[in-house]
Image 1 (cartoon, rainbow, N blue to C red):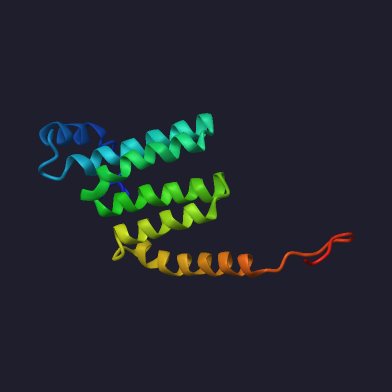
Image 2: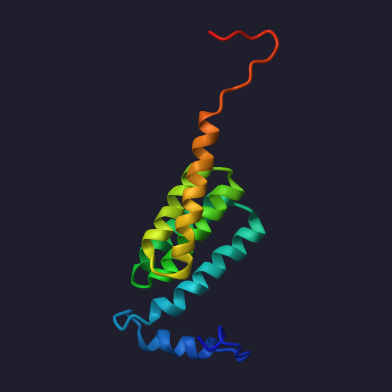
Amino acid sequence: MLIQNGSKRDYSKLADEIMAIDKDGKAGLRAKYELPRKLNAIETQLNQDKDFDKAVAELDKLAPEAVSVPFLQQQVYLFQAGILIKGKGDKEAGLKKLELAYNAAPETKTGQQLIQFIDRMKQETESGANAKPEVTAGESNK
């Protein structure tokens, strides 16, 4: 929260202390500090090796860990959706992850924006699926 509000101080040591105190995660604090680090590590690795499948698999493992922090789980699914849609060109799988992102935290600002984005993607997907293929010379309509 301090960093989001403009603080330039490095709070990583404080985060380390919080995670050490909440070793078992029962206080609900460990995930809030640990998950962003894991997301960053996956993003860094993806930027280095461009292995989309590996990143999606790592995020699949991370999503259940984020259940206790809905806005972070939403970020995990959004990251996956981006990889699937932009990286792999798989709009259908990406759309499913966008829906999971919305369901993880529908009350957030991002969740509210996702409603419109998901609807738009569905319309684009449906209009693309309903388009008639062009017949080129030499082909017939059977």
